Image 1: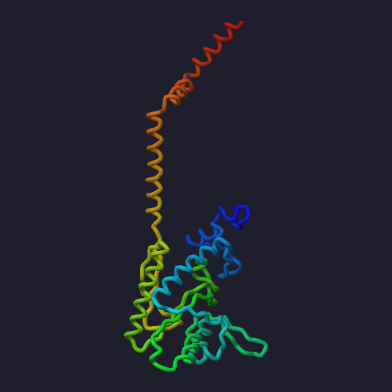
Image 2 (image 1 turned 180 degrees about the vertical axis):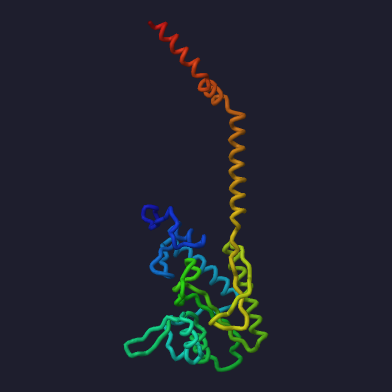
Amino acid sequence: MRWSQSFLVTLREVPGDAEVVSHQLLYRAGFIQKLAAGVYSYTPFGFRSLRKMTEIVREEMDATGALEVEFPILQPKELWVESGRWDRYQSEGILFHLKDRKDGEFALAPTAEEAVTDMVRRSVTSWRQLPFNLYQIRTKFRDEIRPRFGLLRGREFLMKDAYSFDLDQKGLDAHYVKMDAAYRRIFDRCGLEFAVVQADSGAIGGSASEEFMVVRTPARTRSSSRKRATTARTSRRRRRRRFPSRGRGRKRSRSRRPARRRRASRRRRGRRST
């Protein structure tokens, strides 16, 4: 593609609502544009980067033996009432829900435990079909009270979610270890330094939860590296001035003559001509 035919708009100034560095850089590089609070559009260059990261996630998940599926975003209320999470998500105010023309209630899925469980119970008839792991890379919706930090805490976002089905706790733990190793490889391939921390499961539930947090480089380290680079450039300039080339040395000797001598020589030339 020619540069004249590309669609890229960058910003010099940081928008006022961009709090974290990642949000600021995405804005200034022209990768995202804000449509509403917590809702962002991806520009061609932003979507290209997102697609590359998605492929890395997909390759590492496939390497663990997980199988990719896709579940509807629009899910009926009955499934969520059966799991007991409709009222819980409603009370916490994070569930987008709507009614159709027949007064049927639906939810814009913030997660897919109900949908995947319904698929498996309709299909699995014997324990011999276990274990397996299903995953999807799909858009999710959560009505955040205060959307912030750009893509980190939005109301519409892309998420990879995986669901393993095992015979016992031992099999579940084995799948958890596989996912942990896959996540580490994903961050390594993206060139990110990360730390694994204990987290709260929240409304999703579960007995254990860990989060992979990207470690930000301290500002002091960045400033010291800039100082080292500046010092190196300054030392190179000094060396050039100390050991100039012959041509440059003659030019500098002429240009550095005192101003008085130059004016006196001009006067003498003027007298001779008269």
